[in-house]
Length: 108
Length: 119
Image 1: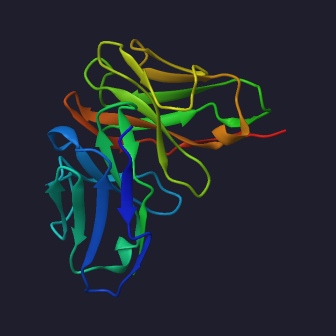
Image 2 (image 1 turned 120 degrees about the vertical axis):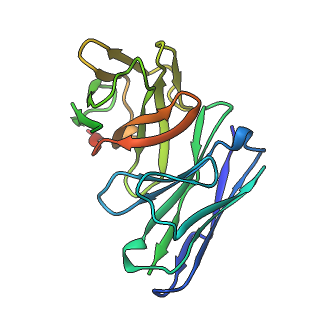
């Protein structure tokens, strides 16, 4: 099983600042099958980024993804209060097919 | 517009069974894979099971053959049969569509349905 470790657990920042969220895999993630999701309280997760750096439909360009192999980063620039949420990374491959990180809580 | 609506959740005793349903619209199961993902209270996301466009199935770990995924392509309804339920199966269960075959990301989610396993 590919284990995804996200850091930090909680990140507290102010509006206008930039957030950097990390996701480290226990093995290399094949074919860049790495995605990021945003989940707000009481809501289902929402796909933000896929294939490491492609933004999902409707996601503003303040969100960007980077990385390769085992180290990946989600960057959110010009933070807004509505960005407060838990962010999860997800990879595909191996057994089980899909695994998620434990999440980073972002407080604005 | 893609929509996923789960039903069938509720309270069940340990050792009991429950069948979840997910009614999908805006796409067909023969074109896009669909999955179940769960989230225990206050915890993270966990892959439960998925079914591909041709009907192949996969399961997450720690299920030990207790869960079975199936689909009715004529009605576009996804099912999750859960047996021998344990307290640790308590979670919100989400139905989620896969972006596309070859793009293994969850691009649409249902609102989720709560399953509580308790005596």
